[in-house]
Image 1 (tube, rainbow, N blue to C red):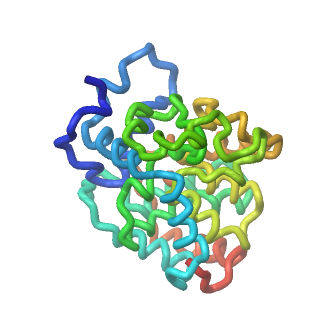
Image 2: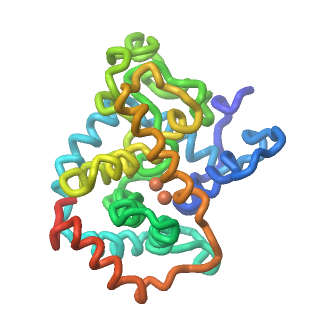
Length: 285
Ligand SMILES: [Fe+2]
Ligand SMILES: [Fe+2]
């Protein structure tokens, strides 16, 4: 029996951190000898991917983009969004897990420590704010997880790709050709990538941040492309020219978890100032 046929008795993620912790195990910093990732992965993570891969159809992605990317959900400042995201109650451990704001600031502070420009530091602060989708009532599988292309053949380079058998799109012939509904080399901008916090935050920030920042925000969870080399036949030269920015960003997103929690209130004036350099007092979400 393969994994896609198991009837799961597990619950999905206890917290959103669990997906990112799993990414660290899948993409460790140093080269490890081969180990069986799939055998060691936590049942909750596996159940999360089963739900994600089963339910993220092309129609679902288009419907969620129509619902959220016109930005009619809320009006709030960037800082208010950070505080709003921090109200997310899940089963993470408050003693060891960083809060949502702390993860954002660990990322931005490590970018800052390396002397990167101010827009890059701000990108670190913003990149996961799209997770407020959870507070709008969206399930975890519609907010986080490695993203993948819909409307074309499912890639076996996506983690737990065997679960795609349960996705109704696997029965739609046009979606199961190599290019699907797309032209080869059309550019990722034209591709309906599975919905989540990346795509939503890209739309929130698109009038205010430079192209490189928007690119990092939009594709930071697109691991099948930027880590596994999938979907390159749909990417354009522009996408390939931007990929180094994603890789640069990924270093800070994935590998800056430390036990030292940033002093949010002490850092607040610096970040309020940085936010106001790029954003008006209130923006649409
Ligand atoms: Fe993220
Ligand atoms: Fe992140």
